Length: 206
Image (cartoon, rainbow, N blue to C red):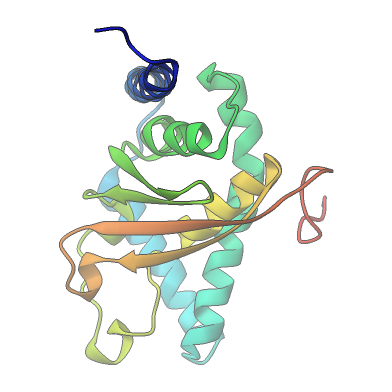
């Protein structure tokens, strides 16, 4: 039976996506093997101390705490892109979907050792899903923090900052977290605007 053009086009599209997934995963594993490793326990304790300090500085106003932790992540994200591009040899991404695959499977692995997956919801929305989380090692939130403290929101800021440097203005949020009783971590990323001139107004060179 002759393959119709439309069927062939769909087949090739899936083939390209699957190839990019495989390449991104392999690249991430190779990079993780090369980078210097920090002690996981020390990393988790250091972040926990940061969260504690922000809680104290903001008089336990959880909305302000979340905002400050996200902003810290954003500042990390905008400064991580150059290092990632220099070390990763990642291919040029032609779409948000390809960027999401590189972000989850290469960048997360390179910087954190996390094996993450991508779930595409629409052309402008995707989720990053992962089990391991070095930030929340040994963490159990008190009852009065569980619903409103976004302990891992640093990740959302990092993603927002990094993607903004690639001309994608996004909003990120945790929709699942084991700290709230879920069985996995899920960060939802929504594209709001494709920027024309690099980083947005939030970025100020120091």
